Length: 197
Length: 234
Image (tube, rainbow over all chains, first blue to last red; front, top):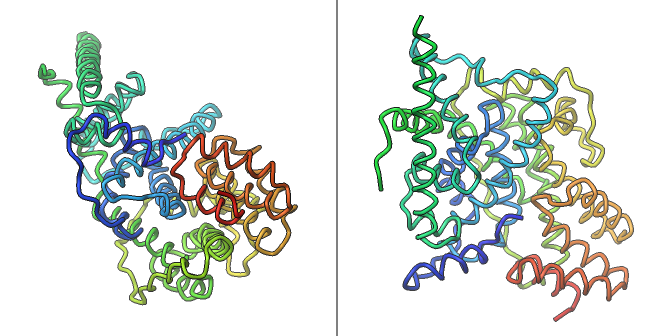
């Protein structure tokens, strides 16, 4: 179950010094405007494909709207929305796995872009490799890696968002970066071997 | 912390770029999301909003949004009407009468889905009947990614039944929700509605047990507080 804002805050509060001023809870429309990009990027980085991203984002905000009264403080909004996003993405991923097991094609591999064919192929290739390497990380490492490297959040922001101590964030991030780096280099060597006639 | 290799940084850079929404993505979805939210102030504005949405997006998508929004709107309205005291009922948010500009998207998921929907059989037994709903919206509910909308529809059905004085019917919808979505995104709301329904049936002990379970999972839940208030529980 996704942590409630209060739960996340409670955990984060043990790690972060100093009380913060309590601001009014944003309206639903304000939450949408403030967190749209965050939700979209999280969903994509946690595995939502381009053919389902609209549904995922809409579902997240559908739940946000439905549960808006759960949000008690403005500072907890991102953590709360993050929990909902992870849960919605997980639901969609589970359903997609079922669908993929029935042989449906990977939409992202078929998608056309406005880039030149070579650039598009290269970019798509990189994104596919990135997605595969992220999939290979365990969920805890992936979580901090995505929030730090893809969403460019600070250690403190990540700690607040996922509700763990900052030391834990950094130790998971260190391990995730090492693992990701090693996998990226293996991937490069593998490609080089295939290019050699 | 040790720097990552060039290869790893390149992949991360590709992700930062590829995983970012475009302006068109923002405009399209924000219009859909906030347009849907403004409908929740009451079903009365739904027809006009559908006209707006139909003009801005396309008929199938607007219909699909309404299939999602109507149960939400009805559910939210019923929830507040049946749980909140008159003094605590929030005034409805003002509806923005201005049309929302939506950037066109030549071949995005919305259009692809609309095409796909035409080939699928309808199956959304729990959504309220609506003469405005296009055939594609019923097919939408059967698609794999629509679990959450089905959750919403089932809970709305339960809350509507409860507000009409049919608690047994509400319990059946809640049982179906529990069976289909045991760990659903809206499971907390289901528990709260179940507690209120049990109270309405006079099954106080079962209601108390439900409230205790909720408290254990999330003691600060707004749903818990409202369910307690509704049941006259402490």
